[in-house]
Amino acid sequence: MPASFEATLDWAGARDATDPLRAFRDEFMIPPHEGRDGRLSDSVYFCGNSLGLQPRAVREAVNAELDYWGELGVEGHFKGRLPWMDYHEFVRDDLAAIVGAQPTEVVTMNTLGVNLHLMMVSFYRPTAERPAILIEAGTFPTDRYAVESQIRFHGFDPATALIELPSDEPNGTTSLAAIERALAEHGSRIALVLLPGVQYRTGQAFDLEAITALGHKHGCTVGFDLAHAVGNLPLQLHDSGADFAIWCSYKYLNSGPGAVGGAFVHERHAQAVLPRFAGWWGHDKTTRFQMGPEFHPTPGADGWQLSNPPILALAPLRVSLEIFRRAGMARLREKSLALTGYLEWLVNTQLADVLEVVTPAEAERRGAQLSIRVTGGRERGRELFAYLMDHGIIGDWREPDVIRISPAPLYNRFADCLVFAEAVSKWSRGG
Image (cartoon, rainbow, N blue to C red; front, side):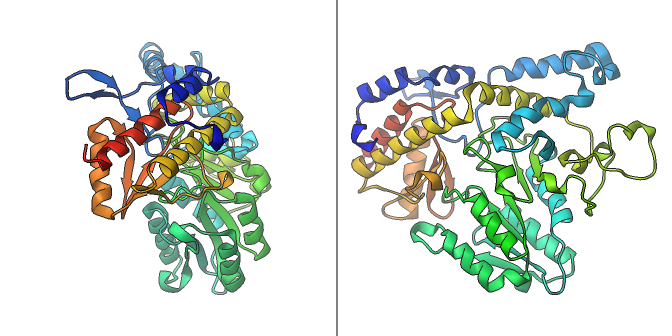
């Protein structure tokens, strides 16, 4: 494939014109950028790894629920096109397809941090002999804060019960062999292995099935934070054997700032008597309204719900998942590989004296995101980032020295990648 790439607008435009997914871009609102001449044009948006763009149909979907609320009041729980009582079930099948799970293994609820704590209540069961949690060094603060607080809550000391997996590859990525070594050394003490699907700073994708097998071999429970993986990579959570996973939906799932999150619980735990923080909405729906004093969880992931579904937050997710269903994860992944491959080729062939890609080169070890360092260190990196933003090219910055650029296949184009490369080239020449 790289031999066919060209750093020309004609080539990029031709690829975009024949892209079978090109029409989906029109279903999203592209933020405008005002040029120095005062003219407005579409920005070049590479930040779906942080906040996905708004689908145009979201406004109508949210307004429809507001209309039902106004017209039906409490009866909206039982009437209307999508009654609120079962609203979370209307996103279940599409979500399960995206993460490779059985419908009963997924639930949309809360936010990522809340769901992580709820899952650890059930799946982090430390003992004096096995108190530890394994995370990757430099994990996202949400995960570290949650893990440390859970360790302390159970009466253990993070200084000895928090094991951080060091990176062992250039540019801060981590090999499967390093995970295997850590488990060989500490596995008998580890109660929970908690790793990301995609590492937020480097963009490295992890092999969930292989990690799960290693963790289970050493008697550990295994869970994943899929914040940067869901909607980005084809996932097979059920087949991976993972005990649980959690994610947010405001990144690649395009469901809005602070959007409702999700969780996966493998079906082998569907009927298990596990400790959990119980809530009324997690009670068996067939007897929920009998208002009994004893909690009987709904089998499957629904049994971890605490409260009724947030309708106005679920409506954007429902719209986005419907787009994913029409596009198909297989086709999205194919385009993502091509876009990211083109962006990497541009960096390596046109900008090698300016930029360095730190994300693994192997397709199976990355998703849409390329993490890039600028030659010359952090300050030059910040200068380039500011220049790109000033010219309507929106990525994001992660300390200490990484610019994250993520071509999302639902709305990004090959021409966007070329615009990025040309802007970097101009900046490097003092433009």
